[in-house]
Image 1 (cartoon, rainbow, N blue to C red):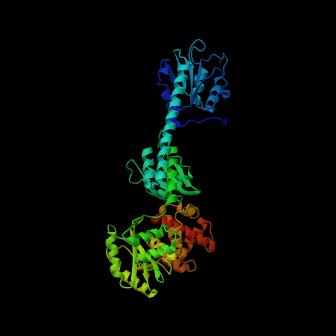
Image 2 (cartoon, helix red, strand yellow):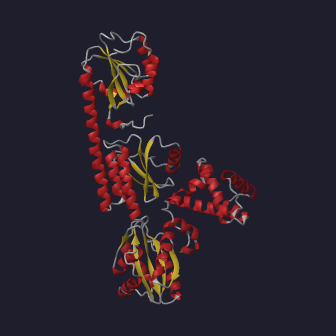
Image 3 (spheres, helix red, strand yellow):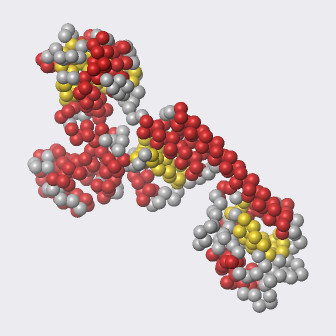
Length: 527
């Protein structure tokens, strides 16, 4: 195909059906020989051709106009029409007259067989009127497309400059396209969506499985644009195949994807509710707004929160639905007792929780705090155990302890316990910490693909057996008991897993990769 050929976008050009409604065509009393689908062909240009050698003159999508003056009595129309079809000509217009008083039977037959629209004009028409009208329409449509594209580009560029949140970007993208727009990560997990229309109740049912299948099939029924910036692929922006816009739906999705990727690269952390000066300092600590830790330590001390020569520990506890964070903070402080200092904040996403730092003179008081909190979380204001990070001695290390506690709380590690030491779950914390990394998001789809492709019940059983085995790889009897299967049946399931995954379940490297993959998958399902 010629390298200099230009493909005109489908929604910026005229169809054969629309051409037949133009006055310059109607005055020729057109007779149409074509089926309905072929009339939907797009016209990219018009060309007058009076010979049977189209390849030398056409580049694709042309409306071919002719009077038949150069055909001759022995013209062979089958190869001529076949060549027009190969060149993707939109239609053939023949003006009947002195040179061609009626349509040759061979031409009509060839056009019908090749499904090329044939338009016979029974009245004389100046071809220049057809070409002039058509080209004006094409240029006008292209101008409108360029103007609309400029508006879309300007809009999303403005959102990036303002630092607009992801919700705003998605809502505006859905408004431009007039349809639902979904953002999923690179592991096919639904992250956000926006829609200007009411969605069916089953729209998101089995989203991960359906989306994986559609990606593998080439996404022919929908429009997909990667959300990728600075070498990081955060996932995909997805719209229905029917989505359209004067600037082109792909342009809208691309600009929205750039704005969304910029926002995701800029902010990763959840929003913080602030109660007092110390809580604002906690926000500064977590978001690295103050990089001078010596100065920040002095600010904490000045705010009445002792840091130097103290035992520090991060903690978090989930809030019950509808509870007032300020009231819950007072309740925890009332239970803390003497010798224990607290700085407490509240995160309202992805789930509401109180979190903060406990400061004590010795580790012994940390135990007192732990016991006090067991009683505090029995209040209806809280929904689950208290999660504790590691004990540290400096403010420089406390961020890690806080993250351990808040991540353990988000993951709901061991929800039946009263106190959970989050650091004892390193794999779950590592997976949570890396959850934004595209390579980690894709890991389950790569390593567990044969299991995830199974029907729902079989998949659930295989994952349950694998999870039980990975928790006790050196004690299969214990794993079988945890799975509530007899040893013989459990061993059969393990053999099936080895066959499906093509992996050696006695190999340490395989166990490590599968453990990480399963942890990522379980966390993605919970989210």
